[in-house]
Image 1 (tube, rainbow, N blue to C red):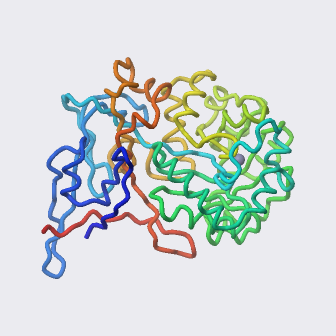
Image 2: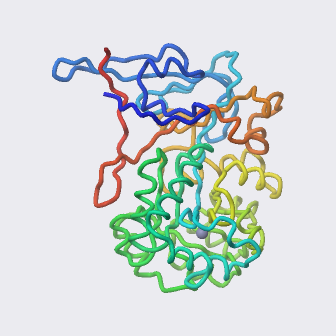
Image 3: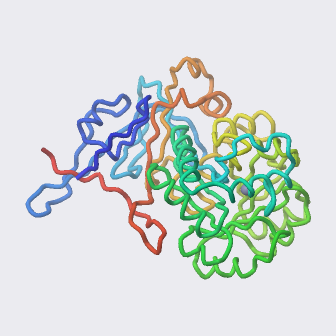
Length: 413
Ligand SMILES: [Zn+2]
């Protein structure tokens, strides 16, 4: 039986998995009819899966090659990507995966304008940490929940968050994200025990503390260990690499020697160009990084910038020596691959986490290239729908939500 919710974005950004067939057929862009496939009987009730299609220009595969056709979705997964003629002006792209956030500081937006890295965000005495220590739990949850909702409404279906404040901080983010259909992949902090409820460990930086026991704990729990490195200078890069992390964040001040080690160790990097600009710590060498490893895009602290992947992509494309296609790959598949999420690419077998753009919107009409249009120009007003594959159900496993797919099975009336 399908759970029906009253939540709906004012512009009908949709959660197809939550609605009945009758709802589906009323929504533009859902090819009619939604197919119902009989999959068996349970206690005399016939059970069906819903299959439906989206038509338009599809940015398919890892290469994001635009092609006219349809995406067939079955039970929250992409079943097929078919080429066909269509008069649809929709552009179907993978949904965004924000590869680095700190949404805990949603309570202090723009509070650090004019401050440097140390004063703004460095532990333990920065403005950010003072604000985090002072905030009430309910206010913190409310602020993070609003940020999660904003990310969802702007095309992001998963984000990789460095959560401060140890076990308590991770619990607050879990609670905040629980009411939003978005996957919060939480890198916890503090004592290694945080890994009992976090999805991975996020270290502030190798110059801040000794993290070998935390690295070992992450290995033991089979979860990723991520760490900031090379943000203010190069001094913490080799020590960070000595920890053999699963994800590096920033890597602005890298040398050829660092890049060789990153390549040999095959460690992906999350870059946050707008945050680096605000804190005046330099620009990440994205071209060089891309030539040595996978690079993903993140928006970093919410106190510094809005967590809009549209803004991050546009700034990156117009500032750095990377193609628009590479920027869109960084904003979708690279973040997903960094932590093993089965999304970010439109091809059979992947989770159906998709952005459906109105290619005929006032903003996007007459765009020469759909990739350029999305990366350089598009915004939330051009998003007709976000198709959300929410892998994290409410089921608790060791305090961590288990990866379960919500079913689209239903009993017809
Ligand atoms: Zn960070």
